[in-house]
Image (cartoon, rainbow, N blue to C red):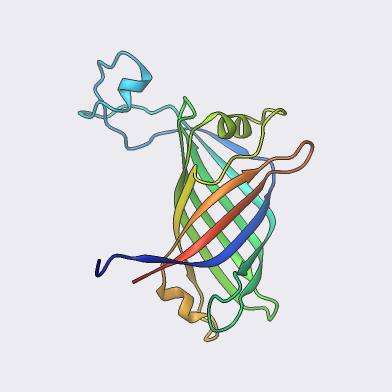
Length: 191
């Protein structure tokens, strides 16, 4: 069918996180009836404002890498995540996590590229245990977290990246006594 977007595999991103910084309760723009009988109906019965009891936290990135997949682009891209954080909001029942990620990537030549994405993590047992810091937490699987994002740079070599939209899937890799690793596979949206 004509005009529908296609996905072209583009980048793999791996980042190691530092311990989360819990900011506290957050007011989300959910609307629900004040007469709701449970948190489940409160977030799905739309009619007026309500406090969501979401917790806002920041997940600082200690370091990471961004690499283009073989065959993507005219020239391979590689960079190191030198500064970044994921600001996320977790609903009180761990059913959904909203992501707002921003980072600076530095190429081996010293060029800076700004990367940002918005997305979500579906609440399930694996992600809930990871986000709660449970020592028995296991890695999450592909398919429970998606995002869309863009790159920005003024460098002529990579400026073409700024006119593209990317979508991705992420998983959280948790190993005993090791920092959490976020792995993202990004694809370029094209027609």
